[in-house]
Image (cartoon, rainbow, N blue to C red; front, side, top):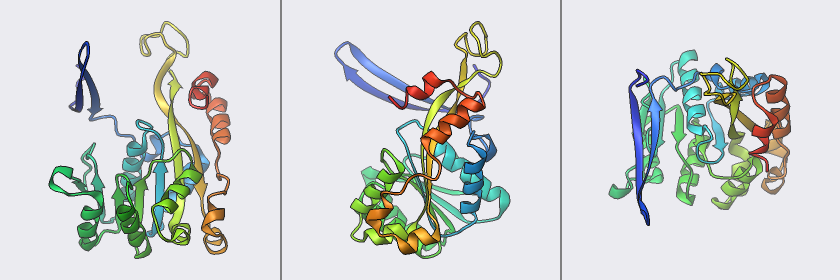
Length: 269
């Protein structure tokens, strides 16, 4: 009993030896504020500036469980803290109810896909539109259309790198140059285990003797300027180097003693 209300997402599946059960716990106190995410200062500064621009696309990628939703929720809370704005989300599922935001869920059994939901939600006059995942051509087209018509679009997309996001979105559209003109920022993140701040050694009760407690982001970021959009073809855009690399992230995490080299190596092997 941790003394906090929580939601539980349950998945079961029959195996030869019996039923396999996985439970994912969502604790009320788990949502982090923007300045608690653990991003390097230069990444925080870039995100702050990009949030102030109410058009274009901010895209996040990373494997399942890499903290993408936590990052998005923190960005939305940051927007609300700084200004009043109309934010609408379409998610699968809604992982946490946020005050001051219109959150919606897709319902595949009833035919409500991301693309169909977006068609209706764009008529609700959002300033910021969050798309849980761009999965298909229709959703990609709707997201690009929204970003072109005065909406800030924040979305996730499955890819292995920042460049991979561009390539994936290009593959989902008929006009790759349109993609190049709308992407403003791509964040590709992982989560590595954080050094326990109570001990950093074995024997601590807070981390059960592991020396590690909590997680911190290990990331790369690709920021696109107006010059990039106007002067680069979509094929060249996919060859851009990240403006903040995994190597820079590694140096930051180790210099601040936030994690261990072995933890980073687990995500780069």
